[in-house]
Amino acid sequence: MDNFDKEAEVVALSLRSKVDALEVVDQGSYDLANDYNLKAYQAQKNFHKWDDPVHDPITEAWSKSCARRKKVDDACKYIINETGLKASAWMLAEKDKADEVRRIAEEAARREAEEAQIRAAEALQSEGLFAASEAVLDAPVVTPKVEVAMPEKADGVSYRDVWSAEVVCLSELVKAVAAGTAPLNAIMANDTYLGQWARMSKGTESLPGVKVQNTPIQTRRI
Image 1 (cartoon, one colour):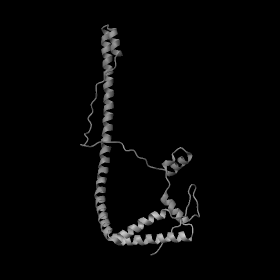
Image 2 (tube, rainbow, N blue to C red):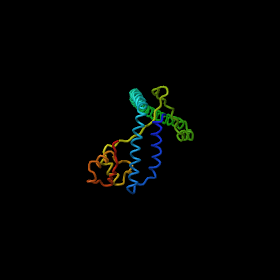
Image 3 (cartoon, rainbow, N blue to C red):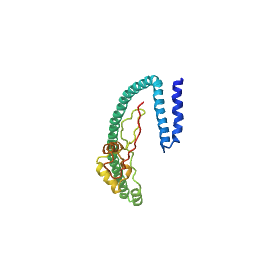
Image 4 (cartoon, helix red, strand yellow):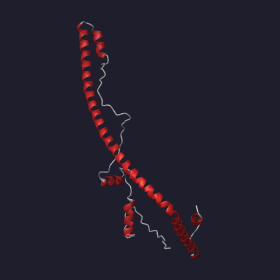
């Protein structure tokens, strides 16, 4: 780091600590504030004159690298997302089909087990073994386990639920928040719109719940 850069750094850091304690209350403190202001402008200009030749090529290389990474990453993310959505949708549909097949098979197996139990009880009863017949009827029905084929998941693949929400009618949501039936956190102020509105209206208009502020700032040409 040469003296040119070091001087700008020293000025910037030393003035920053002084500004924290500065209160502009009279002509003298106003002049001092503008002295600091001018020195900061000059320090910034001098620093960038020294640093830009070093910084700009690095920034350009970084921007190109980010663009390359984004192009590849975006394509891969799209492929991963789309194939994942399609594969999981198919897997879920197949699971639902298998569950329905299993339900029907289990219901049939349960009915068959109940009918077999009744037949066994009737056979015992016909032989005069009434106690044994009652015992058979009182016993829990044993339903055989039903196996249903499921599609095989790819190696390393798992599935999880991802819940999300979408506002389909903003006015209804706003009314619900106003009525207290929905939390205030369900909506948020549009700071971009409100900033544009404030700059255009310049305090001549008002919105409920919105405070318009004007903060004058100082600019300088050097």
